Length: 498
Ligand code: NAD
Image (cartoon, rainbow, N blue to C red; front, top):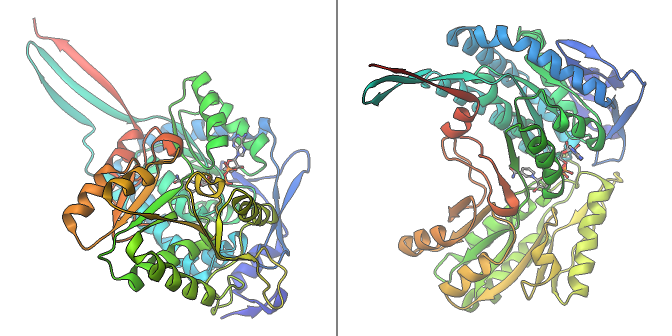
């Protein structure tokens, strides 16, 4: 059942109740925590500009306390049998699935995400948690080593309190990718969501408490990056840090962890290429890339933002993309007719519009104008999809824009395509589009990135490691057995036999 709320949007009664609290707490040790200073931050619906709620703006001492609480909760959580811990985590997965429409609507409102896509993100959280719980049952705690003259084995155990700092583009999905392996291995977690999109994390922590996840196992601290985020990154008592966000902040987090000798994983930005050869179905490929660049308004780290197209199909490909992008319906995330929502905040909107100007000033051809978009009845952060074209030395082809803007360039042959795809500081994800499987595999192996996709973009099956190289990240990845193994520390145990 739905009910009418602000702007005639149909909000679920549970969402209305959640937001009606106006000031939402952080959750530490199963308790509601308010900033002692009384400081709060407003969280805004990017689709309407209206305030959704206030969240706590915690200071460094409050973040440090949350880490202490997570470390204090660790021994009991780690000591649970695999069966007991798995049962609790599967109960959490079931509860999140049951509350999917509520969490998805909160996420859609908070992040400006099309509601159906937000539902997909919440389901992804559930699937990821179930995947890592199952995988943890296959990890051998003791591994015997065959070493001449010695009895030897390795022994795995969890680390303690693990910290997570997340960006605003996929809050629930990234929380799932991040914390699931840590929890399944027996660690406790402290989550710092982005200040623009903290609501789903708060809801999750409250739900975890409700269904019996022990206090202190899942802690959510909110606040500004430069204070709350920096305090978490600089805390010497966290046992691991996982940061997802921009390379600029990633460097700061990496430096802080380096000083404290805390293992750190950085999942950073990208400037992915889609390399389109002349043997493809032009319309189907264009359709797929239009879908990719408009998905969550292009605010996707691994998006195909440089479209490299073989010269002889370039004009046909571009003409079809322009036609399709013009038809994209921009609208409020809760409007079922919307195909693309707003960008997350006015600053991000300005960033997107600014790159269009900077790209043109740097010599790019404007293939599809883009610019601000008007949505009837809503003053949100809306922009239209845009296409630029020209030299890959252009600022809009080199830097991450994080909006619905793709940059087009032509290539002659495979050698030139590889050179162009690799002409970037980033290394997150590229795709190659061709009917020739041999060429596809060759290209996929020649592009310098953590991920190469064939005839698809944005593909994340569980079991396939996903991570970045160069400016796109370091220290591991997500979604695979390696991710889980990172959340156990190894002790090598040796006894000489004579
Ligand atoms: P951001 O780096 O500005 O912020 C990310 C998080 O860091 C937020 O929670 C923020 O509060 C916090 N933060 C800010 N300053 C901090 C500081 N000094 N110390 C510690 N924490 C601090 O990134 P964003 O704008 O939220 O997200 C967009 C970026 O995230 C893009 O570059 C995008 O490509 C990247 N991203 C990468 C992946 C991936 O898997 N590789 C996934 C999603 C997003």
